[in-house]
Length: 262
Ligand SMILES: Nc1ncnc2c1ncn2[C@@H]1O[C@H](COP(=O)(O)OP(=O)(O)OP(=O)(O)O)[C@@H](O)[C@H]1O
Ligand SMILES: [Mg+2]
Image (cartoon, rainbow, N blue to C red; front, top):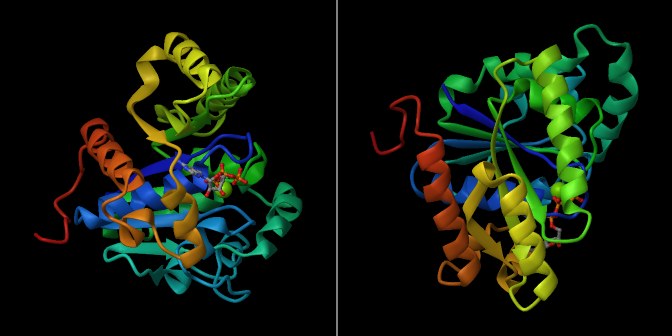
């Protein structure tokens, strides 16, 4: 039974997709079976993994009830990493779902069919707290929150924690916070250091020890449709994501014996 982790933060451009792609890839390279669900109409995780968004096979078709997840899953250029691709059509879900029965549970129901096949399932959320993110948090066991060390980070974080509490009470009592990840960290900036200390003192128990530093290879890799570990395994960004994978595994030990090598 795969662990389901939503990667969420309603703030835009904080490193959600970068974390989703590269943590998924690092675990896949470590021979776990991994599925990444791209639940953002921007489809950045899809193109970042070298898949061209298709208007036929995409997560919107599943959310809207036209297809099963198994109809749209595709393998990627990273061994053991599958993707449920997105497409811009997914914006329609934010408009259509409010009228649908059990709208918050659409993704959770879809995942029931594929959960056994994977050790880890990640959901890359869009920068909003709309119905798609509600679906992700309702389907997930845990939520991983990438955060950029900038001035409004803490305000956004308390709003997200409040939303998680609402979801827990209304739809998913098992939802837990997996952790807060300092991403795009620039150690040359005094402000980043100050804010990271503030975050660590504010939500200390949740903050990952691993920090993802700003690294040009991480920015370049998605334009070539690759996770950074496939693009340049020796760079600092790859090192950071392998370290993150190690810490993630300690927090989320595998539930089943479905590792590829077994
Ligand atoms: N550690 C890093 N070093 C350098 N660039 C990074 C790093 N992490 C992310 N970036 C770059 O920052 C930009 C925003 O990152 P990303 O797309 O992962 O954020 P996001 O939270 O998914 O954004 P959105 O809210 O729009 O979905 C991207 O261009 C990405 O390549
Ligand atoms: Mg994104």
